[in-house]
Length: 118
Image (cartoon, rainbow, N blue to C red; front, side, top):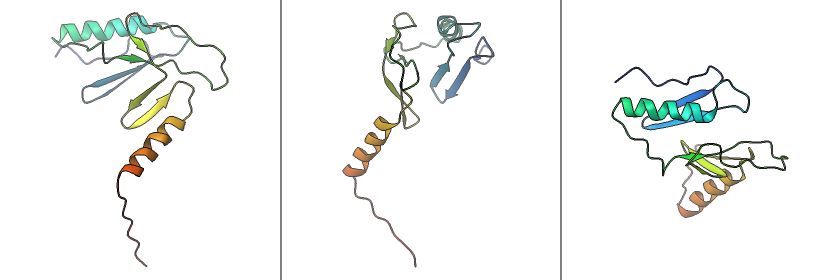
């Protein structure tokens, strides 16, 4: 493969796990989210890989008290209010209510046996 995939800017973070890639770009940076996303697309093409844009989602994180929302920043990518990453649901408002609800739903669907040794 042609080099390893890296973020273009030191301000931006790129996390890889198996076949998933996650990109974090702050509001103020020298390379914006579109530039970083195009870098990922170029890297994939150079390595004969395809980015499934239908599965690619964008979450804009903001303080819970924010009274505004941003229009989609990455052209052609669906903006969602939450996304699951390695079993943890991250919400746009940085609250974990949805994650806790998901875990409680799973726990209610299975029998949990706890053995205590005294």
